[in-house]
Amino acid sequence: MRLAIVGAGVVGRAVAELAVDRGHEVVAVADSSSAVVADGTDGRDAGVDPDAVVARKAKRGIVGNDEPADALAADYDALVEATPTTLGDAEPGFSHVRTALERDRHAVLANKGPVAERFGDLRSLVDDSDGEIRFEATVGGAMPVLSTIADHGPAHVTAVRGVLNGTANFILSRMAAEGLDYEHVLAEAQDLGVAEADPSFDVDGTDAALKCVILANVLSFGAADDPADAREFTLDDADIEGIRNVAGSALDLASEDGLTVRLIGEVGDDSARVAPRLVKRDSPLSVSGTTNAVRIETASAGTLTVSGRGAGGPETASAVLMDLNRLP
Amino acid sequence: MKDDENAVNAYMIRLELIDEPGELLRSLRPISENGANLLSIFHERGSVTPRGHIPVEVDLEATESQYEAIVADLQNGGINVIQAGEERYSESLVCVLSGHIVDTDLSDTLSQIQDGSNATVTDLSLSAPQGTRNTSSARLRLAVEEGGVSETLETIRGIADAKDLHLIEPLTRGEL
Image (cartoon, rainbow over all chains, first blue to last red; front, side, top):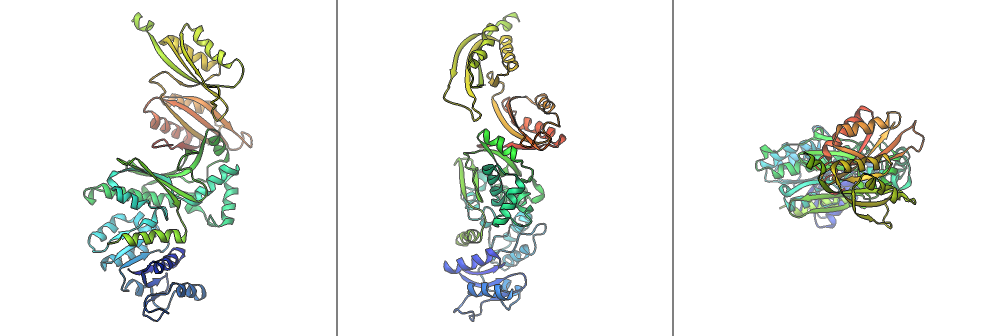
C-alpha cells in the first residue's frame, strides 16, 4: 500500500520504519513545516527512505525540501495522521483526514483529536467518500481494543472499563508499592521520562478521557441503526477526575483490604467517566507500571480482557500497521 | 397482630471478631440473653481478613424484636457486624475518603451517610501518617440494601463535596 505519513514525531517515524519493513511504500512524509515526496531520487527506486528522513530531521530540522501540502496531494492509498493530538476543532489533523477522504483515499489516525472531538463530522466525510478511516492506535496503543469491539459488533458491547494512561498508572502503582506520596513519585517519573515536564494531560485524566470519548463514540454510532440518532461525545461530555488528590494514606488503607487504586476510564450507559477507583489487587485491571489494561463487557461473550503497552513509538505504529492491514 | 410479633424467623449474622480469647463467647452472649435459639456457628479460625479479623457466621431463630435487640447489643458491644438479616444489607460497599477527616467531624460524616441512605457503616479504618491535622484517610465498609449501591454512593459524594473530602469510589459494576 502507498502511504503518506503526516507527522514526523516518535509515532510518525516509527510508522515509516515499520511500514517499509512490512512491504508498504512510503510516498510522502510531512511534519508541520516541511515534507518529502518520493520522486525516485531518495536513494531507492521508489518511495521515501525513512532513515534519510530521520537524518534530515535531526540535522536540519526538516523532513525534506517539499511543502506539507505536497504530501497531502501525493499519490497515496492511505494517509497516516500522526500529528500531535489537539482539542476543540482538532486542527490541523482533522483537515488532513478530510483532504484524504475527499480524494477518496483511506485515513489511519494515531491522533486522538479528530475522533474524540469531531466524530460526527468524520462520519459524514466517510459517508461521502470511497475511503475509510481506522484509528486503533488512538485507544490503548498496541492493544487491540477497537478491533476487538469491531469484531464483536459495537451493539453487543455493553461497557468498557480500563486503565488507559500509562503515566498515571505508573504513579499510582509506585505510590502503592513504595508507600510514597504523589509529588515524590511524580518527580521520579519525570526523571525516568515516564511523565512529561508538564504532566497535566496524563495526571488530570485528559488523555484517558479522550480515549473514553472515542470508545463512547464507537459504541454509540456502532449501535445506532441511523447515525443521525447516535449520540456524539466530545471531551466536554466526559466526567473527569485525575490522580493529583490521591493520598498515600488512601492507598495504604486500600491495600489493607486487598484493594488498590487505579485511574479507570469507564464507558457505558451513555456516559464516559474517568476517576481514581478502588479495584481488587488481583483484578485484571490492577496492572503495574506503564502497562494498560482494558475489559470489554459483551452481551454474549462475557468479559474480555486485553492488556499491553498503551504508548510508545513502535507500539503505536504497530496499531497503525494493523489498521492498514484491515483496510479494504 | 400478636401472632406476627411472636413469629419466629431464621436469621443469619456475619461477624468479624478480633483474634482474642473470649471474643467468640462474648459475641454469642446477646443471642441467649435475648432469648433467641442458636442454630449454628461457622467459625473458620484459619481464615482471617486482611486486618487479621476472624470471620464468623451465626444462624439463629428469633422473633423480629429479639433479632433487632441482638444486632444492637452486638454493635454496642463493639463487635463488627458485617452483615445481618436476609434481605437487608445484602450488598457490601467499600470507599476511601481523604482530606481533613477528623477536623470535618468524622462522626458526623458517618451519621450523615447512614441517615442519607439505606446503608449502615460496618467497618472503619483510619490512617493519619502525619497526624490528624494533615491529610488523613478513612476506609469505610458499608452494608447496603440490595440495589442501593448507586444511591448510597450518590449520598457519600454529596457529603464529600460539602466537606471538601476526596472520595475514591469502588469500581462497583462489573468485577471490582
